[in-house]
Length: 80
Image (cartoon, rainbow, N blue to C red; front, top):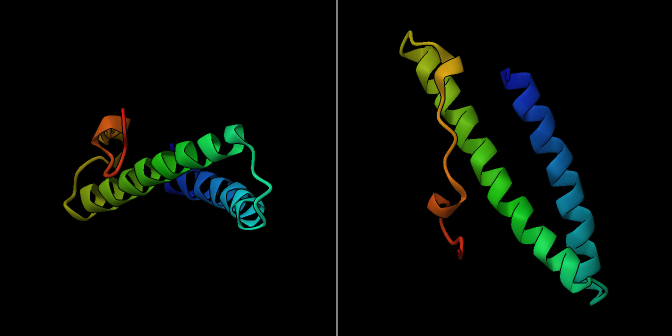
């Protein structure tokens, strides 16, 4: 997965997140949509972490393709 792929996925999820936030702000979000918001938050944190790892590895002269995905349980604020 390239940096561009990661950024594209971040943008897709951020767009979905904003739509769900708008529904939540109007008190129109369903339980399923609220759960999806939490999933998106965790996934965005994972993607940002991947992007940071890739950039750090590249800066250090290492292979950015060898990044490790942070498990959802390790994302701050995640309730398992």
